[in-house]
Length: 410
Image (tube, rainbow, N blue to C red):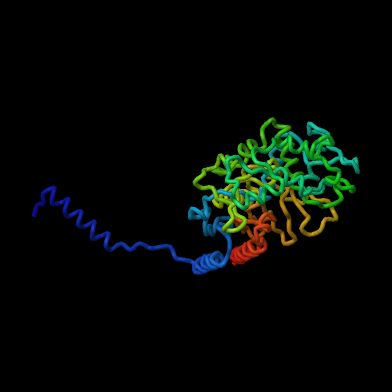
């Protein structure tokens, strides 16, 4: 029997349809541990006062789990996603560490360089004339102490923000201004130059550099400023060119005005108390704005670097970055590489906190595992006049962090 071309086409279609009916699509198996972990985090979120948070867990050098929970904006009901952008607090200091090592590779200075050989203003400890080196800054042993007043005064509420928010009024009571911040170099000179308007002898420790551990946010930004002076680029541009862009960390930077506004997290001191948009002049020490997805790219690169196959720095630079740089005599919790915390358990990590921000990032080179957690809440002393208990948000965040740590090890 002969079939016309049209009949052949009909038969072929019927044959394909029957074949499709016999094809079974195999779905990837669902890991019961992962399902249980998601439920655990969901339950912890539901019982918490956190607006939103995001988690990444890395196992065997690859992302094993990445999920976000809750809301980026409570008032508008916008979900917190893996692409939601928020500040990460002092985890930003690890970017200073990478940037410094890149500047060292470029020949601008070494860790042993005295900072007064670079600074355009003279910075002298009135109690001790020993030179402060870059290594002192990156290990928080420069003999510098941040006063609360000096540090808080460099925060500012951005123009056009709702000043009727209860949280805005509380921030204003701390002496914070409305408008624009100062240039990084101007702020640092105001703090550290003897003729600066914010100069205070109590900023300097009598022991001098290399003797005492004293965590200094402003000292970290001073290290970042050295890059500006030597390269002629803003620190923000240097980091974008040498870290953000090579890692394809899109929608990541220091200026929230330049971020994708649809993906920007509101920051809270309590679910009912959003903060107005703010900035601070000492931005390198704590104001990298990024997402769970983008930060995981950075974390993976740091793990590769620790294993000797990173792409941002040479193998030798990564070794320096993660090797102990702290002087002898430091106690647990005071030992650092180049801004990275080095724990007794062999982990390399950093945490971060700022008004409306809690974040934690940690990896273990021995097991090739890691985790990061970020949330858009932190009362940071601001919420107390409003009756917001900051210990609640911290406690609930660390419940989540402990669950993440357990899952990483399973």
